[in-house]
Image (cartoon, rainbow, N blue to C red; front, side):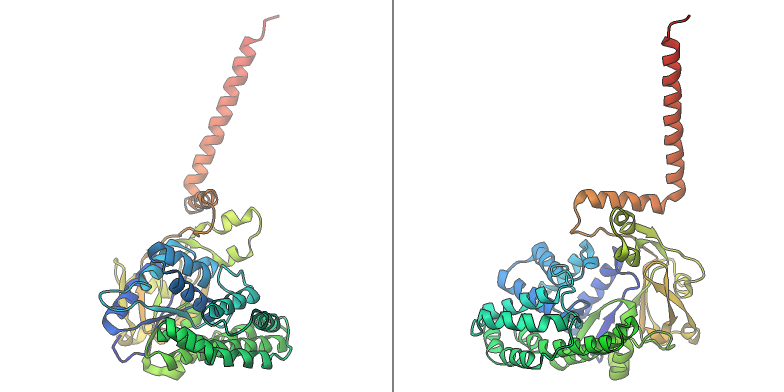
Length: 430
């Protein structure tokens, strides 16, 4: 990957697996220890990540407690898993004399963390309260006023002008708040704080674009990825190097031009060879279908959250080609790959979705675990995870489950038949 790279992007084709976070954790560890990269920027929200990082500093927690706190307050629901907690716990601990990694986000969508349930008002309120705890020079009334004015626009529910409130907030964050935070926290925490107004302006721009386009989802995604790329570049203005952690749909270079312009496409255009993007692909195994999980309601949640078998047919030409290279899991540097690896094909997008992909043009490297497995969401009650796991086993072993069900039905029928026969035998003869 080389020390000349300023940004290393680590992707995933599937959001919820055991293996994909852990194989990338090894790369984070390597880059942290050998190349001095101290910044990991994830999907989520920059202000949610700042609040979570501040609570880590303020509470002095470590190990599993710090991982649980950070994942709840900074990451969206689908990343509330044991493998992701392991990544976070290690990142927040000093390693072999190197300081802990600073965790942030390149994402401009406030309230994405599970703690806030998509509410920009809760997200902004928690952020302002965290800053105010370090710099109480701003009154509760003013904090409440900013939250009330800014939140509807940050949730894309209003297009009213919020310039004055945002300017007042920026002056506070750049002046007395920055001084107060700098007196008690590392300089990188101050740098992230001072990027918050930029993030908020980008979010307001995204909402404006979306509302002007009659709430077109295509426009929402186009604007989001373009502005997320600008926020990532702004992070590089404060930090010498960084690691990006996101889904392939955000990080791929879109060399074929078949998808909306991705964040990766914008970053590649701006950074060139200073960016190195690694995708993680898998052909076999099982995982949650996140699109189904997002739409599920009521009892359907049980089967929606269950791990389902990954289809491995010819529709997924990229994964099938990678599977043919080795019977072991591997990493490959695509910079020196044969020309054939740049031919158009399709790669997996979650379970059954596909993305137009020219592998060696859309990624610089690839990690290939041959098989992946589902992993429970750690905020669900134990009984529900047991039910989901049972549903997943049935879905992954459909034939065996059907045979067992037939045997149970046959056994039940035989038991009923024998019971009825005994009852008839006990009846008095006429």
